[in-house]
Length: 293
Ligand SMILES: [Zn+2]
Image 1 (cartoon, rainbow, N blue to C red):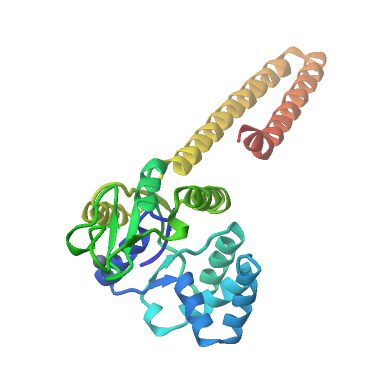
Image 2 (image 1 turned 180 degrees about the vertical axis):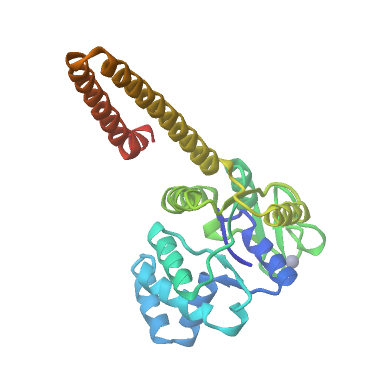
């Protein structure tokens, strides 16, 4: 199974990826983890990434694709993989499609973990870590208990700067604009897109995810419906054209019985009708679709 996981920070896609990894014995491939590893090992790629990140930028699409190409070539990815955190741009998504086509191993599904924004903010901005024992709590869902309760010696709860509400909301906005909208739009047109309701207990979400993946086919009806509507429109147009042509033929036959003058007039009328049909077909096919979107 070859899958891409998409979801906002805090949507729980990493946790779900770890569960699926065990279930299907396929690796979870997180570009974040790979980059951190390259950084830690000081590889040429790591050094390049370090430079880019130090200047506040993102690692470029080409480098990310090179990382993915190298990772997918490893034997543990032969049976499939879960891509987590990649692609994050349309260029990366296109590059991935091309790469997988070359390898002859196209994607099976793209899963979007859907969580309401307000819920995401509660999840992430409520996160606190005990500085002493590194346990993670959530002031909104699972408050600190036992020896980590504030005031006990040695234990104190802190919030990661990244998790602060205003910082997190900005991250979320960037994710939505730069990744979620364009990339899910790209995948929607491929029919691979599935949306999983990622609110509620972790087990429930896993169950929904497995059901969605087992169902196969596109999880989102929209592109398929659109294709069906287009094919219906084509069929109607064709039927109309056939009807018109039959009428033209009937008129020509009738004119043939009436003599030379009638035939001449009927031919002229027929030519006019046919050229009108041709013009209509030309106008409707690509141009109309574009203007409707
Ligand atoms: Zn503690």
